[in-house]
Length: 162
Image (cartoon, rainbow, N blue to C red; front, side, top):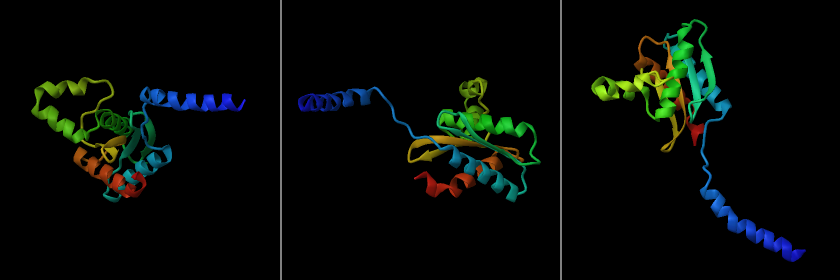
C-alpha cells in the first residue's frame, strides 16, 4: 500500500507541469472592490457637481458593479457600462481610442464593434502591467471630466490593488 501511495504521489508531480502549461491563471477584480470603485467615482463626480453613472467590469468586460447618481440621466447607465467594456476589452483608456479614431480613419471601425463606446470616460484598472478590470463613467459635461472621476476612484482604492 505504501508503494502505491508513493507511486501516485510521484505520478501527480510528473503530470502537474503538463497540466499547468494547458491552463491560464488570471487576476480579476472582486465584486466588493468593484462596488467600492463605482461608488468612489460617483462620489468624486458628485463632489464636482456632476450627476453620473459609473460601471466597473472584470478583466473581460463583464459588468460587476453599476452605481447611478439619483439625478444622472437614464442614458448614463448604458454609456458607462459600454465605456467600461470598451476599456477592459481593449486594455486602453477610451480617450486614447477616441483620439486614435479622430486621427486615423482606418481606426474608425472601432466604433462599429458591438458594445464599444469610443468616447472618453473609460479607464482600465491595472495591477502592474496587467489589466484586471475597467471603469466607465458617463454623465459629466465632457468625457474628459468623466475620465477624471474614474481616475480619482482608482486612486482612492490604490492600496487595495497591490
